[in-house]
Image (cartoon, rainbow, N blue to C red):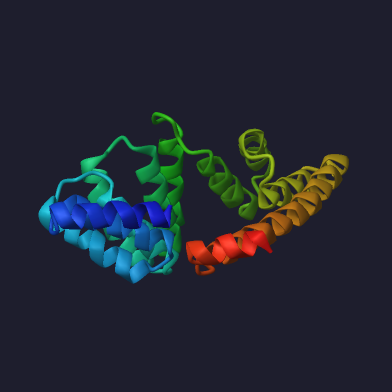
Amino acid sequence: YERLSRDVWEQLSRIAPDSYRTHQVLADAFAAQKRREDAIAEYRAVLRLNPTLPGIHEAIGTQFLQLGKGAEALGEFEAEQKLQPHSAEVHLGLARAALLTGDEPRAVKLLEAALHLDRPPSEILKTLGKIKVRHQNYAGASQLLVRYIKDEPADSSAHYLLSRAYRGLGRNEDARREMALYQKSSVDAKQRNAAQKALEAFHQQPQLPEDDEEEESKN
């Protein structure tokens, strides 16, 4: 993805070096590389050229969330909500920012509203479920988490939360089953992460010149 973004950016920079699309491609590439501040700066450049482009405030807000800057993220998602008032994704981002700033009641209202919008992300179910577990509303939490796990069966943290909910309801056998699934999916996730890191390290290695590659293949 990063290589593709770089190629696209190079083409755009030759054709239209200060177009909003050029800045957007570069911002997306920085975001993929987790260069948060650089991504934010490029997304800001997009807004200077196209201030009503949907998705850009949301992208900036997402970067601020990753940096742990809840107040800044909140402002960006609020700006995005004015452009996309019926977006479930924007509601979710705004709820995450509200949670980060300590406004849980607002977050809950946003998440519950998002469930009634078009194509709500399944992450909403997990976030609401987690809040309900924290407040010992185990029945409500279990209903939400069961729905979430149907879409995301490999999410280990969801199995852990559901185990806690079942334990709170006195459903000990179900709690043990979910804890076993949590342990298994945690191991699987660690293995996937290790494989992904190895793959990323491989791609970051400098490529051999073609002549060297041919010589190595002969050997």
